[in-house]
Length: 396
Image 1 (tube, one colour):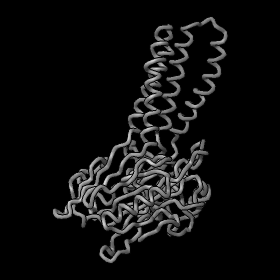
Image 2: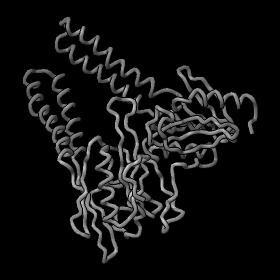
Image 3: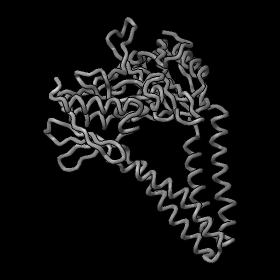
Image 4: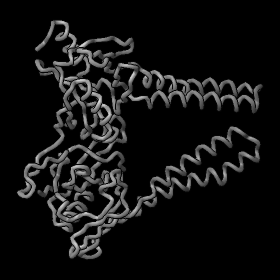
């Protein structure tokens, strides 16, 4: 029940104001201030802004020390601070905003702060509930399709308040736990769908993405080596992209850095060292690995090697009967930019409640991923679940 007109007015105002955007943006943060629990905006932008300001000041100091009497130096610094300093200030304002949910332990109301001037609206906790949903096409357009959204609902209103979004459900876990503490009940997970196979009735599988990374090109191709062994081999393009980035890093470190040192340019040496190091680490991270599926049908075990897993329970061989299905999900990456693309991911679905899904691949090539998914499903003898929302190659 609505406790007062002010409570109803506050809810309707917030819900309609946030109709086309989320209150906390992507990847919200959770922190405590004494007895107050705060679910706020991500602090990464603020840290990036501080880093950009420090970088701008340090580089400017080195440039001035090289030739403080050169008039072009001061003209360059004006442009330098206008661009880099401006980016840093925007990052600081966005990252250290006090926008968020504020709740004191045991309080019957939760305060929501928003806007540039930090307006405040109070809501009654007993009237609120939370849902976890998958962003669909043409809904909440700032949130890419396929991403997970945390929304707040009022028991006597059809309007919803979009709180935050993230590529995967795991990215929202801190906010989910904090919201459960505030509301007293967990969020209703509407990302799951019941499995329709006869053997696994009653098992629900999340349609949300479970991979935090992706690429806009095909990274692996499936090959069946024998009836008991299969492998995902890296593609030539994956090797080429990683090699190109590493080559740029080696060029900066092996050629430009010694040249800057011989010229006595301290600023140039620092820039070459920092840029080369970043490119080298990035290129190394892009080097693809090889994943092997070893199915010992006589012993009744399945082993997967060459894949990173967060849970220790899935690192040991398991029974083929623990594999429920092969799943395809999709999500939109960087929908606000011109280089946006749809990332499709390939997952193994297990009976294990601690590790229900294992992500294998995530890239944009639609036909290639569906074909490899069909080959993997045939190799394992399991159904293929198309939860991508795309009408193609569906096989259930």
